Image (cartoon, rainbow, N blue to C red):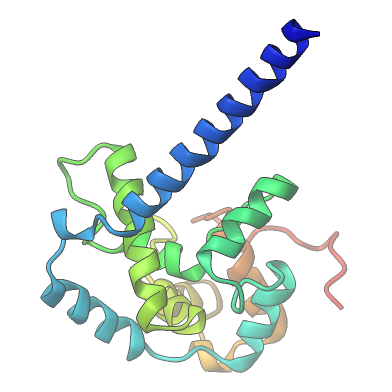
Amino acid sequence: MTRKKRVIKGVLWIVIIGIASLCIAYFYLRNSSRGFMTDKELTEFVTKVKFAEELPDRFYQLYEQEHPNILSDNLNQQILNGLFTGNFTKSPSLLAAMISEISRQDTDSTKISNRKAYTLAWKLEEQSTQRECLNWALANYKFDLYIHGINEVANFYFKKDVSNLSERELSDIIALMKKPSIISVPDRSEENMY
């Protein structure tokens, strides 16, 4: 009986230490922005995000169909959802942070860049909405080496302004975010779009 109690006690301590370690790591990441960006840089970036050109309303609806609750859930909710479902989708705040110059420095390893991106995403969420982050991210998204931003991709593939794209064309742009392709828009003829 005492051996069983020791094993249970040992497992409980391992679980407690594991949870405490995760909490410490989380709070460290949330508050470690001082090392790689100044308050002025953060303010400038947040201002760019807040004033990015809005996308058509239909784009937001289609994006939420593809990624449910992505514009209403914060990064923490996305992480928890990903842990429990195994289907993690980058929130717009994380997407914006990952493609920003603040989190991507030439001398950084991928791990350092990702740590910076998560920290920046949490900071962004304190001062902007997921919708604003999506606007900025898509204005600066690198679909490939030569096509940067939703306006360029709309012009390249459809010879139209973003505001003039059909529902199908907006859906194709969302698909391009998953599978960028210089040759053609991904074939989605098998998918039920409506």
